[in-house]
Length: 212
Image (cartoon, rainbow, N blue to C red; front, side):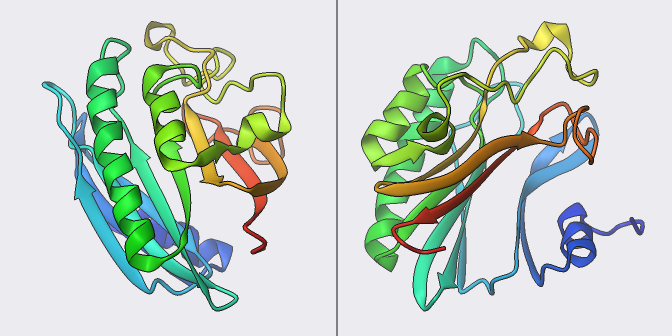
């Protein structure tokens, strides 16, 4: 990757996708971090919303873009919540802001919602359950699977045992009713692509509200 180029721009170019959108969040261990979406569809509208902050944590945000699929708008959201296991209350306050913005965007654009990201909490947690209950979104993984899949796994050599591995903390959430074709983990040791980070990639193929 050329020096100074955004990772999302590189991925878009190398994968043949024509558009990428990046939101800078802050710095972690001296490197810039942010939220990024890569898509083959043009971005009609973009937003970025700040989330409540915790002491010693990086800046957390909610990224939102509006796309058009078959002439119908769809809102794609991306976020990364506070990471520490003891930050459940902070994640709950971040979820409350996300719920507010989901409802605002849904009413503004009259569009379906897709929300992806690292929520840093398990499906049974209060923040995740509150998000699902308050937004009418469904968890694509549990729509397909009865057995849990760990996106943050102790089998991943990049994962530190001090960061509570063997949890699913990454999500693809979509509107109900939702037809999920497939939900799976990628970028693992046992697939064709290998590891990319300390998280496995949470993937879903779906038809939200009849849109492919």
